[in-house]
Length: 407
Ligand code: ADP
Ligand code: ASP
Ligand code: MG
Image: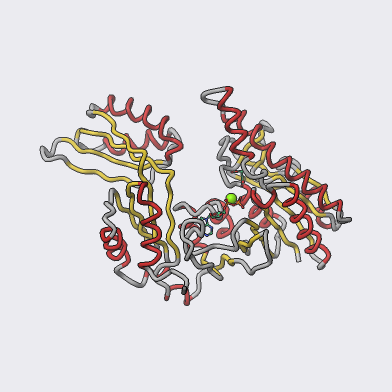
């Protein structure tokens, strides 16, 4: 078999862990497989590098950040290749550029456009392990280094698996698979044997960082066989698969939360056609990803308050820009709330069963948790709440939807 194995930050977090990775890779090779390994930076390294940049500059340029951050993954790739070679197995490390990972030029959140990967294929064909620095690529026109957004090594692994037509892409991390909720928040969470691409996509985009959202999108699009496992033991992991009939029998498959949220409210916006269109096209053009939107008409029916949520990491820039726009639109001002979070329940079973939203609202009410905003899709319901209650809400919903493992 041709297998891609991706090891996250904790899995390569120390020399001891890197040696453990090398042993697993060597075992896989000795069992007769060809192996490509994708590694993250050692845990904490990306944050450390970001911290350094912010000590030098208040607003470091994205292009410079990309070159800086890509170095973390290079270090672990080279060390991992050395560790594998120490075990007598042929291995070579590669940067994103050496694997021909071509991206667009959206620095810090680049999209993979293609993988030329000739060198990679040759390496694998010769029975040599290719150890690839995750999270990075280059632009075709300028040869600039780009990175693929936080958690982007997952995307590197899935994209490499698609490019070399791998039989399996294994994501090794610090938990044993995908759980009904973050096992670090909900101790009674159960490991799922399998989950559909759709549900995984919703869970990831709603805050379950076990897989990067775009990696799931990519895996779904190219039908990459994907499994999430622990690098700390040999327990069977969770397979991400196409939806099957059994899955619809389960009402809710997972509960997740996202604290990286901020709510902005444009107050007293003139209530006439075209205003929301102008506001949100300007916001989108500035590169902000808006999630929920709520509009309330005021009692005088002449103005409205428009609230929307964006990732909190963007809030400083977004507030500045929204204030300018509010002035242009003749609105009264802009309010913001950073202490919110979003809790969500996800399940393909919602397509065929009703009452999920009602049960969610009742559960939050029972715990005196106020709902600030609501949004739904075919397979999820999300509520924005005060972030003080995030863990309480997640645990309560996990229990209310019968997801707790038997005591
Ligand atoms: P890596 O460094 O290996 O990429 P991450 O920290 O990005 O690992 O992702 C693994 C973490 O995802 C776990 O430690 C866990 O806290 C978190 N997580 C959130 N939701 C879930 C979930 N539903 N199932 C499993 N893990 C989850
Ligand atoms: N090192 C990068 C991050 O911390 C990418 C990754 O780990 O997947 O986001
Ligand atoms: Mg990750």
